[in-house]
Image (cartoon, rainbow, N blue to C red; front, side, top):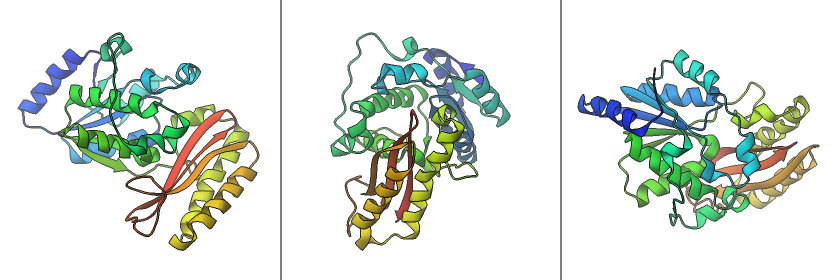
Length: 279
């Protein structure tokens, strides 16, 4: 695996690949890799000649400086995992390589930016679109791969690609789960043994809603899900929504895709999860 820390060297390398008419798959990450990330690399390998992974903990998408500070950084272990699955290229730049001083960015994403995660973390998706746009322009991939766990993020990046007319195809890959159902996340490292047991209420509740889903019962299902999660010790519910999979506004009879999304604080760790109910 080739490792680059500067845009210039990475682009020189990727230009040779492009000139050889080889396709590039791209998996942008913030590191602290787990099997969920590896599944994205493997899916990218199936559809492309060369796979590029980036590891960059993006400061502009954190509202809370403490959250940025405690975000897990495990680059040596990450590199070992990427080498094990034969990833071709790693881009691991310092912040100064991505951002100039006092850079300004604002993309008019529309109502989706203010919903769910956007409501709980104002400005978060401006930071996400800012860094992903930069990475897409640096790597110039044919296809980019993201996990379904960040469903809203995928929807917003799709909107960004459409608005900025970027020549990249986006692929959303299924959520990878632990054997007990917990959605894999870099933040799981912060869960105590007790927290982890309590965290299972999120996936269990989503599964229950999927099994019992009926479009006529959306408000009832939402209410029961909120009660179940709210009653779990050590879990503080942020939101549970059954939403239109395209707009993330409340689902109704016209929704062609319906998704249930949840966010909660388990102990001191904020977790998100979702399940597609119908398409």
